[in-house]
Length: 545
Ligand code: HEM
Image (cartoon, rainbow, N blue to C red; front, side, top):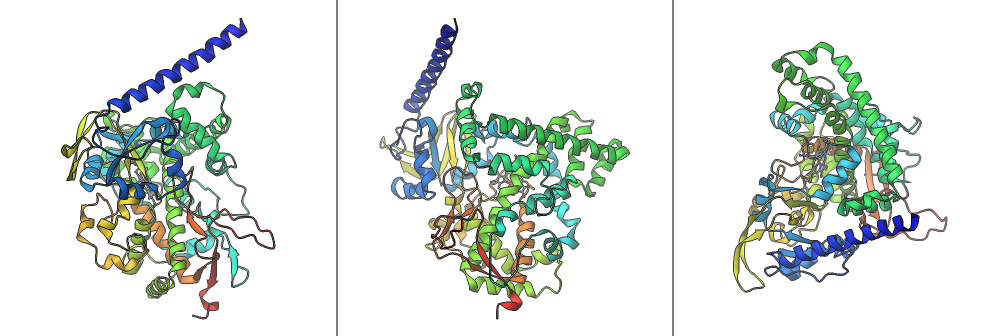
């Protein structure tokens, strides 16, 4: 009997894989793009071109040189994916958000990690953020006396003993942004930066999910399960960790929500006008979420589960991204001492260690450095979309298809997967010129005309995407980046700790491309390859400049 059940289960799984395989094959063979667009050959049926892309972050850009700015390649299980760096096509995709939505796999993984209602942002929250776009920014503005070094000096664990100490500070900086976000927005003390404090529950949940020794393996399993949902029925590795992290997140989220609701008391029941007026309080974002939870208008109401899910969602969205951008900024400045000195001179013109946001925003070279970092090293190099209905994708220049016909628009079939090449758009030589890959803050003094066609919410950059689903936290991220650079560059001269070429973008298995030690010389003292970004920080007064 047991054998019969086992045979049945194995048979059912095999049948499922065969049917799914045939479905993908049918979709690929009948895709209207198949006879139009060229593309690289499939490497393996299971991995498509996925493995080679993971191994070489510049591969899609190289393919662009061979196949043009619009081509087809193959994702996992050989699902075909449209790559386009055509700015008219990309503008169309990001504005027609009702047709081009976040890829199913991304949504499924986000739902499993963060809970129902986390991503995409619930409509009601999206609407509120449209009406009050400054709400996240306001969180920082409330604390403008703390933006500068007094805040960071107390929070940022720079362990300086000697003038030239080799430190891996960015491993811990990773959490600086998130800590501020959580404590300011949600009234939650994260303690990630305090080496003496016990790591708290939420900190542990994220560490387990994203940075534990097996995190990459578990991430790969989650990806496979989202692509082939039947795999969710199997007891695969990572399930227990995910469940434990989810339980922690839900418990803390509920605790934050209920405590805040109690502390807001009567103001939650005031009329819509008064509710919105009081959004400027210390817990602005959370207050806004809670008011949406209590809203009398059904289309503006968020369920308690949606509010709870937003807490880790905002944390995840703002966590690795902003810290990665800061790491790239410091790395680039360590390699470009002229830019660093120029920046330090400008920052020193501010007569306080604790500038306001207005003061930070008035510094043109700081703005240039931030833009150039987010252009040359966008933390999220790629996003995906899925077409939810048939469409015609307009192109800025007609192309000749493989079938010999001329196409000024591409036929897109419902279900088509699309690759948004954020990094490639930001570093396109056609837009930025031959030095597009170089870090050169001065380029922002004279922006090329072609850059105005890039879909963008900030600085002609595709970094935060554009259209209705752009990054809602981008102003917050900019403020964080500026405040960190202000504090660090004023106090320290930053130089590379490793020989040229040792640091590069992390490759396989990462969504966010952090600067990582790629080559690690064998040291006589046998030091382990560092996790973070090694830099030498020399206090300005001891640097001899
Ligand atoms: C340099 C730092 C950052 C970068 C490069 C970045 C980039 C992005 C991108 C590309 C998206 C769109 C994802 C997609 O549509 O598939 C996004 C969405 C989002 N970001 Fe950011 N982000 C950054 C910082 C932040 C911060 C600090 C916060 C929170 C305060 C945040 C909150 C969000 C949220 C909530 C969404 C989802 C919006 C929606 O569903 O409509 N981000 N971000």
